[in-house]
View 1: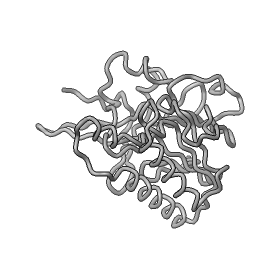
View 2: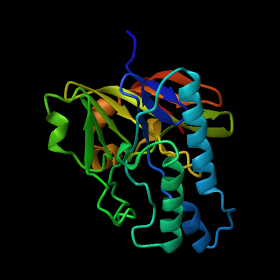
View 3: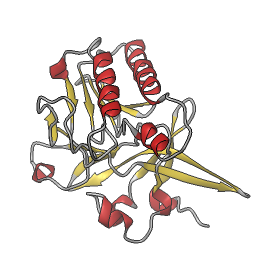
Length: 245
């Protein structure tokens, strides 16, 4: 069966609707590291812009039109106000304005987004378009059970998959796809480049129950789509790909 969406790098694109979804940016994470005494170069915003630009180019290369972009929350990192973080946020928004009108840049509010840096109340708790519900995923919403919703897209849990070969361990960001509430569900990887995420195949017993809107028993039946250097690779179900120490 042909899917109604495609994976492009760390993003998800719905060709028919022209909607691009991007997971947790955590703008300001780099600044937090520097404040903690970790010496890292100032590259986060530059990398975000460059990656999104490449995604835009790939959409055009494939012959599709980009109509909207949806950010799935945790757009910023610090829980309080940070001037540098605000400026970095504005830099990303200004870049996007070269491609899309403001009303087609959808900003979902995540648990880290305690301050709306648009200062215009533009951040939304969720967004529904053509039967697709976009939300952050830190809490369940009644709209998840809406009969008109057939697809749910969320981030928040930063899924990755952990591999071990001999003494070497590697983690790769991944998408998860499956069914919940009789709807198709897609879990997005974080867009944050510094950290791969939390290994979906090495969850602590109660981690998913406490952290995800999809219960662990359902997550275990989701498909893993790991992000490689050149393509997104299918690795079967979570419960068939358990990592062992």
